[in-house]
Length: 235
Image 1 (cartoon, one colour):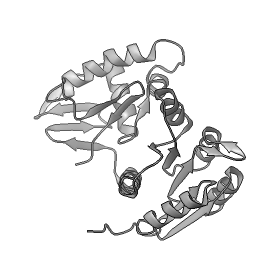
Image 2 (image 1 turned 60 degrees about the horizontal axis):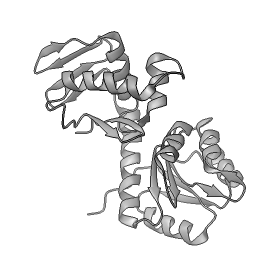
Image 3 (image 1 turned 90 degrees about the horizontal axis):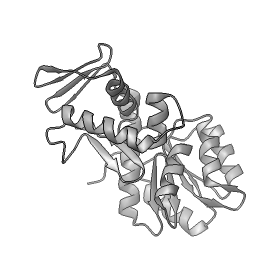
């Protein structure tokens, strides 16, 4: 069954290969009211600034610019999800992309089914982030009250330290999106120096013991190996 497209949604495809743009356009026409194309970084940024698309599909290697720089330029004026395409990704590449503002990545060659699924997920998360009132979140037997800084499991209050709460709040603010070690380290501790992975390993472990039904097999706070962590709160 085809999911209904989001009203008013537009998608921008920035890729210098005409066949890739055509493939992406054909795959995503059912997900948006309009799909625009750009073959260069400069043209893509100009279109994004003028049209404010709901999602950007971005090739990492462009003739007039690097995909990382394009991500940073886009993030200067839009919060639209960015899905990056590339022939290969190392763990360092993934972390750099996420730090630059990308939301997800897809390795070439890719299937149209996976592309469509990832785009639907990104649009759904963006819509949820816009619509959701972040004052109360319920996931299974877990209830989180943002204004009151209170967490309950099965009705019983769970004590969180100030650092644990700051980490949880940072993950909630970016629910569904992988946050890199450096992004979380900066958000919680406010600095860029130090062993981010070690700090986070300790505090994520503590949060999992307090929030997860099975800390060994977490379903709430997911690990992206060598990259960071992601909070899953979708029903």
